[in-house]
Image (tube, rainbow over all chains, first blue to last red; front, side, top):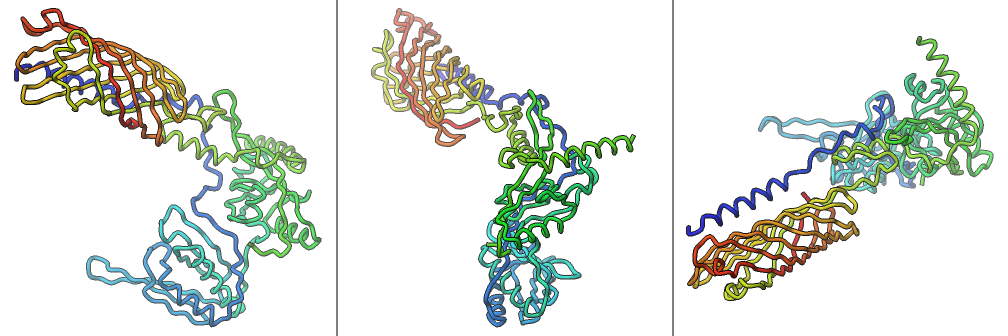
Length: 293
Length: 225
């Protein structure tokens, strides 16, 4: 090459750009503006969403059986994510199986049984983090045994399954409850650590584990981890205190009711955050029919 | 000790219980702790420390790799000698990095390359420049003003061959438009002046035609680093 300097300078240029393109240095430690260490005592926040619905329908038993049969190709088992290879439905129960090949040749199978007279409650759920296709699901609680859960590609399919199961369960005299349909949240007792952190007695309230979507609680502004301490001026020590007060208000024709609570939050103080517990007042709209929309 | 803590929490509890039955705050005005914790985690994963009272406003600094087409117009004593060497292979690449997410100081590096190869021989002109300036955040635009200084290399192999090595400097202005948080379109204008020393004896440069000015109009794409 007549001018080897060209190659040298070109290499130098590329080298200088490569060096300058290295990622910027690590940011300063966040300790100066960090949230305080979180005590692992509060209900976990899940991606799963539970929707409030009563699965009300006017179907006959035969129609309900037909709906479930038609849904066979739209269902997968919750955990195995396998299509149902076998589905038998009659007015007394639903039996399903799915199978897979293990170690190249061994066929294995599993299944579930839903005896309609043992169904105790159902929940419509959405699992955005699990599967992009089968992201809706129905959780069927059965008295005395583990719940059965199936997933479907659409909300409509999960709701149709729930409606059909409810028709058949009611026909078998099962007591199927839709828990706290006028509120719409999963509630639990306060732990000792939670009560101490919030500065109240352990019997001074109940904690919200999660909120059902499209529920009166969601519309009133409740959030998971909120503590409910009172309703209409009376203390709340367990879930029944809350539900019976709401039902009593509905019976008296009240349109709304005040609920007292405490919310855990953070307040900025200079460059740090301090954990605080803020008393709140919620206005819960009372659904006179007690049916979820 | 535990009994004391228990009594203290009961006493505080009574106060809170009374407070709970008093008119509390509107739930819409109090962000739940778990939402703030989630935001904080996301910011930490993105390498951004949360700022108290401004947790959601943190954004990344402007830090890009760019590549684009360069349209040069040469002038000065050497321009006449190079007039017959015009060609389409002209491009520039480099990086620019601001000191902060808002308007702030800016630094960068750029290689500008003009290559012509034809039957008469070849011409190779390269500017390798460092840049310092100021970046104005006019979201979604970035307007950068600054100056570049660096090395210039001129190599001609043809009927008359010579090589010059020199210094180049000049002002520039560029405008970036964010198509996406990690992708920009950009245009730039720069006027640079270069002065060479000859690597050969008896060349055009050693005869005194030792400077070259270049008006560069550039446009291209930039990607987040």
